[in-house]
Length: 106
Image 1 (cartoon, rainbow, N blue to C red):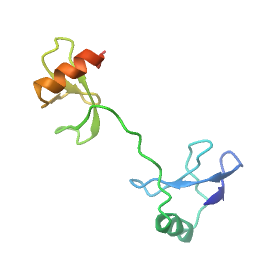
Image 2: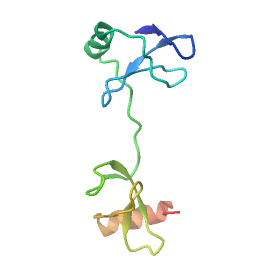
Image 3: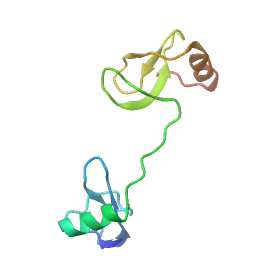
Image 4: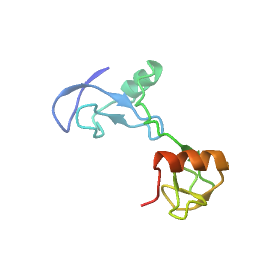
């Protein structure tokens, strides 16, 4: 749906963020605040949702409850959450694959 962004003053094909319910400009990636509830419902009905970015080797963290990319710790023995650093339970085969591809904690 084409909407005029009140931040960048461009007409944009706006998308609805599923998690927050906010309308996002596809040009400047900022929230468009000048939208009516009817516009939000129309975006929902047309399924004009903001695409979630896909991450390889993303696992659900038990501590922070985020689905984030795991990273192999420098010792190479465990995989830790990319957000909070908590150890994640993954198979040894998955850990070895991540090591081989260079997904190391910085």
